[in-house]
Length: 112
Image (tube, rainbow, N blue to C red; front, side, top):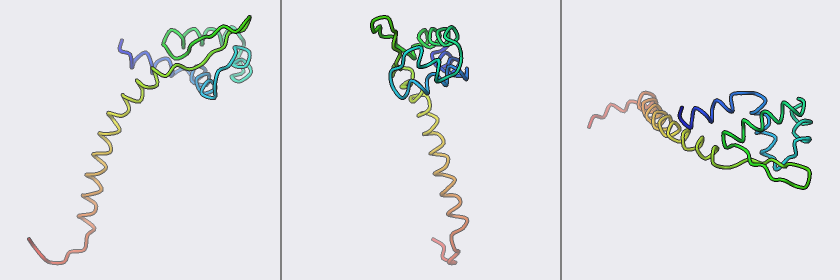
């Protein structure tokens, strides 16, 4: 399984995706995440474990609490993967724009 497979399979779960969205606002405790995603603590803890194993989150102990935050590495991997496709589609759209411009340009009758 490639790293991209792991990253996208991890984010494919709607609850994990929602937890990532909440953590994008900054560090959160499990209790804060429970309230934000509206599932029980054991469910949030299970999803945090999966997110941690996939490299998405880090945990920082703070007394009796555990605070979770996002790690940048998996998002950098997503960006690198998307960038390759972005370049492909930008090139295709540029060629499409040029073809449309040629078809809609007024014909002046001049030939070179």
